[in-house]
Structures are given as structure tokens and as C-alpha cells.
Image 1: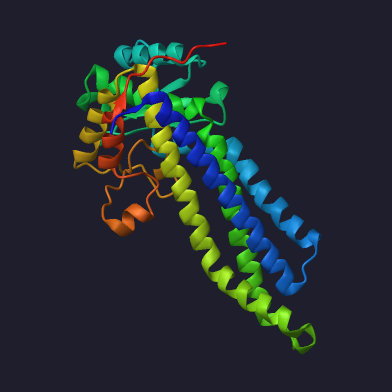
Image 2: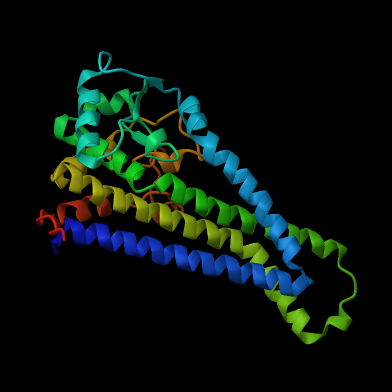
Length: 304
């Protein structure tokens, strides 16, 4: 069934925030169980949050430079890559964003990613394989998708998600380690034992569940960037065709890693199957293409 571009954008934003509310409630619930089981005070939990926040703060400011450095990307100018630079300039004007830095990775695997903590510190990165395989309309679709990540502050959102996941992993590890130093708990009564059992189960399962929620949010942001990108180009078919070409290409992106895979427009590891889709940072390409091709170019909403 065809759906309007604005409807798809709004639907993906709503689903993202629903996932974030559920994620936050899940983290708070797990922390409460851990605290009840060991009678942790607010100071212990606060310390864990501070440590996790400090780690993420450093990552927030330096992850962009690290991602570009590990990818082997080189910054290019308009003279170096006139067609690419012109596409980025045009889509930047259409989106109302500042002009980002433009990088190219000399790799035959077609792919791209955006990075930067906010639009003023953004960069868009494209592989040589992508520039060689895509036509003008397909390249514009990819550029619009990546700029939509910048405009939607996806890097900032995923940083918050990483804090939540990191906090849970840290607290779960502390909880399990304290089991070895726990004495006789007969005085705690039945309620304390119940919290301890529930806490033990959550300490084992919560990092996995938190990771699944993180991946679900990441996949939802890909759908949002697809819809937002189509809104910029007014031509969803361009991005749909680009995704098909990227997915069908046999080359593996050698510079990608598990830490940076979520940043790319498509999974650089070419993994398929039900389990891999569940633990993937990206939705299946066929689902993204179907969503793009179901869009209709509805008129812009009236202002005022």
C-alpha cells in the first residue's frame, strides 16, 4: 500500500521515540532490581552512570575522527571530485545544512557513511566503488540519506543509546562479580531472595536484550534516513536502486569493523539470514526498497 513521504517520516520518528521510552524504562527497571537485590544506594548507581557517561563523552567527541582514520578515508575538494562534491552541495542546500567535509575511501566495495556530533562538525564519506557503480540520481539518493542522518542527529541519539547499553553492561558485570563475595542472606528474607534471583537472570540477559533494543533503534533510524532522504530528492526510486546495487555487489569493505558497521548505509559484511537480521544494525535491503517504492510524492504541508 502506498504511503506519503511525510507519513513515513512521522511514523519512523514516532516508532524511534517509542523504542527509546521502552529502552529507558527497561534500563531503569533493571537498575532498580539490581539495587533491591544488593541494597545498593543511589551513590553506587550514580557512580556507574558517571563512569559510563564519561566513556561515552570521550567517544562522542573523538569517535568521528577515529571512524574516518580507521576507514582510510581521504578528504577531497571540488577540484578532486567535482560530480560528488556538486551532489553534496546541492543536497546540502536542499536540506538547509552547513556544507560537511567530503571524504573518499579507495575501496571497490560500494558504501557510504556520515559522521559528526552535529551538523556543524559533520562529514560524509563515500567509497570509490560507490562512485563508480552509481549513476547521478542514485548517488544523489545516497547523499540525501547520509545528510538526513546528520540532520536527524542520529549520531547524538545513538550516543545516548550507547550510554544506556554501557551502563547496563557495567552494572550487570558488577552484579555478577559481587555474587562471589556475598555472605549468608538468611536475614534478608524472602523478598530479598526473590530480587536476587530476578537480578541474576537480568544480569545475564539484560546486556543481550539491551543490545537488541539498540539494534532495533539503529534499524529504525535507517528507515527514517531513507524516508528523509527521499523527501530531499523527491525521487525515492534513486535510493532504492542504489541500495539494490550496493547489496548485490560481491566486494567486502575491508576497512569496516563491528564498531563502525552501523554507520554505513548498508551492512558492509553482507550477512544474511534470520539470526543475522535480528542482530544487524540495518534492516533487510528488500524491506527498505519496498518501503521506498511504496512512497508517494505528497505535497508539502502548509505552514501556519
